[in-house]
Length: 350
Ligand SMILES: [Zn+2]
Image 1: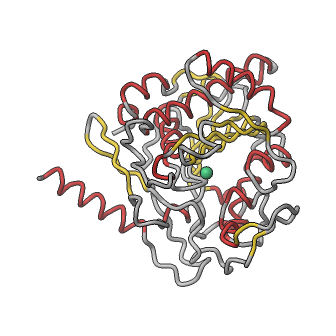
Image 2 (image 1 turned 135 degrees about the horizontal axis):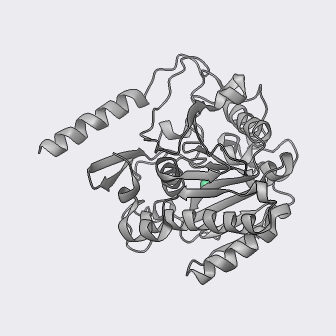
Image 3 (image 1 turned 120 degrees about the vertical axis):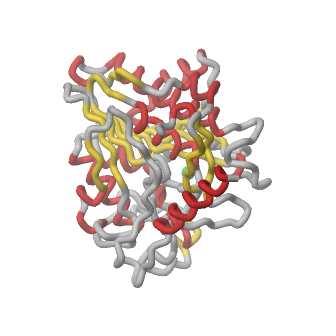
C-alpha cells in the first residue's frame, strides 16, 4: 500500500511539473522535466536552444546530454522521442545516457526530441505514463503523442501540408510532425523551430553519425527497419548483415528521393552526418492498441535491445573504415543481450 502511495505521489509530482500553463504558444517556458538520471559518462547537460535561440523559452526546448571522452574521435548523435509515443526509442536513449561511457569521441543524446509532443496524448487507449521496474523500485516515463501539441504550434494546421521542397500533399496535421519538417526554419512554427535547432546542433558540433530512434505498428512495413541516407547506405548494409548473424533481422531502405522533411534524408543531405533512422515494432501503435511495455511477442526490452544492437552494429561498421582519429569507442555501453534478457530496468539508475 505504501508503495502505491509513493507511486501516486511521484506521479502527481511528475504531472504537476508536466502540465505548465501556457498563456500563448511561445510564452511561459514551462517544460516537462523527464526522469533521466545521467550516468558517470555524462560530462555536460544543456538545452537545445543553446544552438538556436528562437527555441529558448518554448515548450519544445529539450535537454541535451553530452558524454565527451576528452579524446579525439567521432561525434555521435542519438535522438529518442521524435515521436513521443515511440517509447523504445526514448528508453534506448535514456539507457545510453545512464550507462554509456565513451573512451574515444563523444556522444550527444536527446532522449525527448519533441518535448511538446510528450506533453499530451492523442488517444485514450494508450497510457500517459509507462512504468519500468528496476531492482530498487519503479521508474516512470511519459508516453506522449506523435505530433507537437496543436496548442503550442503557433499556427493552425493547414488544409494540406506540403514540404517547402515539394512532394506529396499530406494531412494538415503533418505540419506538426517533427519528422516531416526538417530542415525547419528559425522563424517558423514551433515544430519548424525545433527542427532548425537540431540541424544547427548537427552542423555546429560537426556530428559524424546521427541516429533517429522510432517505432511503428508491428504490421507496418517500417517495423524492424533501418532507413539510411543514400550516402551512408553501405555502412547500414554491413550492419544489417552483422545483425543477422546475431539473430536480429532488420530490413534496410534508402531515404526516398521524393519524400522530403524526414530526418534521415535532411540530416544527411544538409550536414556532414551519416544519418540513420531505426524502427522497432510497438504494439500500442497497431490497430489493436496493444500494450507498449508487456506485449509477449514484442516486449519493450526486446525492442530496446534491437535499437541498441543496431546502433552498435552501425558504429562497428563505421570504426572498420574510419581514420584512426575518428573512431567512437566506449569503456561502458548497455549490453543489448543483457537488456533483452534482464529488462531495461536493470540498466536504469536509482
Ligand atoms: Zn516514428
